[in-house]
Length: 105
Image (cartoon, rainbow, N blue to C red):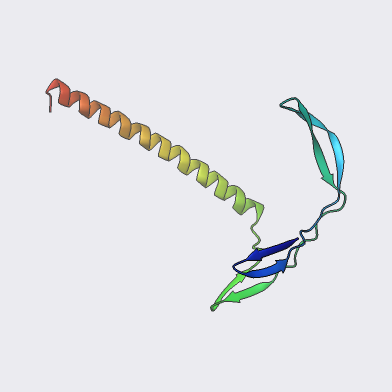
């Protein structure tokens, strides 16, 4: 496929993946939709240590499952605490408004 960007033309050939038709997964708007499975797994790029403007980084950062689970648990905890704090703030503002309307403040 020939593409052009800012006056520069180039040839783009997207990677094609061979798939096999799977079983029917369900219906959507009257049409069947199916799962598609890859015939062979995709080739992963090798891990490389790189440097950009003096800062070292890796193209495939490796995080252990424990670290990932800890991050998810911490994020869930923060979301729960934020919801509780928002509910408390809403209740306090409603009570303050009621006190103002009744002439207590």
